[in-house]
Length: 66
Image (cartoon, rainbow, N blue to C red; front, side, top):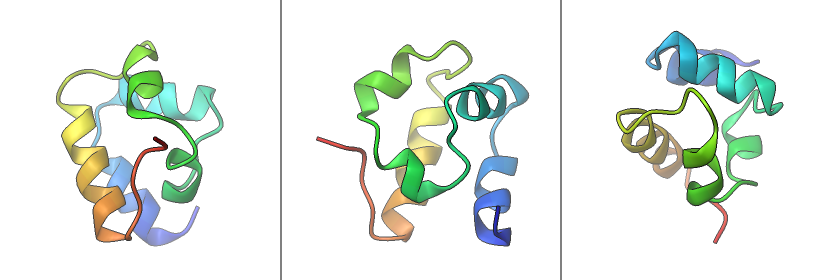
């Protein structure tokens, strides 16, 4: 994982990090392949994680899958 992604994911709690890892999400590009609704359903992704993930995606010109 490149440094920028590590920094983004380091802002998340451990449950959210585990949820991302369990679904093979190791980068923002991989995260963008999933819809927000799908990610919200993952065990460990709490309400505070979604805004952080949206902001990180936006900073890279990405969004959740529509």
